[in-house]
Image 1: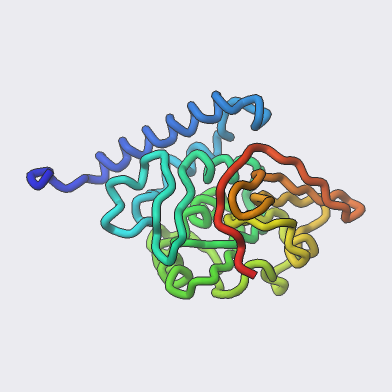
Image 2: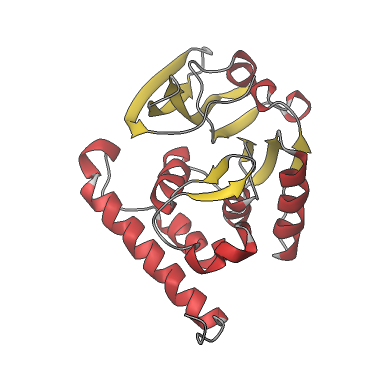
Length: 225
């Protein structure tokens, strides 16, 4: 491998297109569970634009587009592209939606949501990640408000949120997040115990009642609280 030349932006763009095609394939195969056969077109475009390779440790840039989770440090991972894309698709995000993300990591999902035109607020428990994510997102000319803290408490100052994305699992919907979700809003969260969870869509009706729909089994680390 030593004689390989470095990857160019064109090489990386090819891998990114390939990643999105693999996500397309997974969507088609999981149509019965997801309830639709294809990624939303705006999200698909955003996934083609946002350079996922800058949101992983530098030595992993070459494998950033493979369909597998990647370690980013502190025992945390960046979800495989299909699961990350599925969560964003289930969120049904629109431009100008106010979205709260719990678990920024190095900022990839936040960058995709900002690329979609959402107003992004994201909370990360690991201070080093919050800083690194801020730098990476700003490098792309995108905007997201990031703070270090306990995600299970949400971010009350900016509530209510139209959308909430939780990238760690919880046994049940954290009370603060339920409260901070706007009426008519949507939350995507893995719900269950430590080994396996159901990726779930939580909606809040106009009366303030939560409705939960399980989509498919997933594996996430538990939200620290």
